[in-house]
Image (cartoon, rainbow, N blue to C red; front, side, top):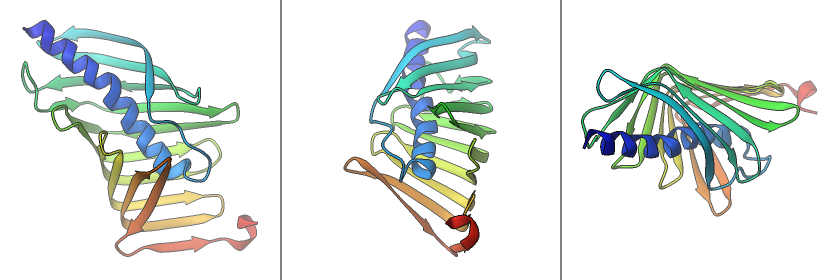
Length: 197
């Protein structure tokens, strides 16, 4: 029975962690740059089972539908029981290669997956950054994998070469083949006209 629970957790993590990272990346950086795809193909998992059902150093790699490679790692994953309602995550890190010149990294101090609800929360300082100068930070991000939605609560700060956006929250959702992003609660936008050209 414990083996079945571990297998179920691993199957869920194979989908949940990459989708969480890709959801954040898509919501912030890919809105005007194309679609990363609905599915994730996971190529490998490396983990050690220690201390009961605790997974140490889980690593998830794969390729998006558009051929973009990604890797997601966590220090640990800990379910609340054999048939978990919640799976706690230690520090989470992710990286996706958008193209030869652009990479996105994601970090969060921790999180929680709710396998039965198909949701994930990242918290304790969620940050994403691209190699071409875009950054996002939020206190917390909630991802619903089934609905393909993201809610980031703040303060939320987004910066890029042409300016900054600050708000109390940010939402993103898939509408047809695109992601729609909106900012709420005391939204402030600063644009540098010289750099926006």
